[in-house]
Image (cartoon, rainbow, N blue to C red; front, side, top):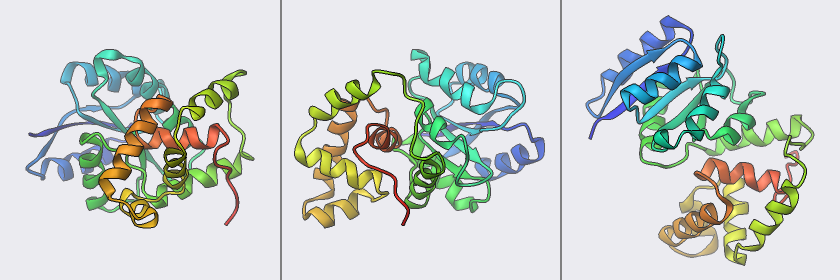
Length: 229
């Protein structure tokens, strides 16, 4: 099955470079290019893209607003967004993940990292590597650990967290720490499949789209507190 990729970036030269890279792979193809968020949303619908490589900063409708639109559209439920940032620690990273992005990648990433990110997102997994998770935590630290959650969210989070089992909470904390399923399985002395089951159940109970959303929820709910290393 060929992965249908949409490129959204206001820099034509960068889109061209990404297109050459993506189209060189036998299992993926670029089905559209957008210079702003509004165009990206329209193309995601018309071209039935599987993965959108979305730049956060674009003129007009930016990547953050476009990601919210895609995430809120039931017809685009299968579309995964990978945010492209200039730096791993970006002021909009937390907001992007909260908006529904499956993860983020620095524009300075190696070609293989970019291709791997597309495949991971297309498979329905979250692109949230330990390096990216540390960037997310650093952003929380830069914000003083505060979020823009609405009043009453704390109670809602508490109710959802109460639905988690002790083991699911334990796994959630480790996921928020940037550990992979294999690493968590080794630490807890169980199989990776068991950890995957715990992660999936935690996502269902917390209403998280994917692993990236789990990390944001873990911090916003207060289950995990950002702290300097």
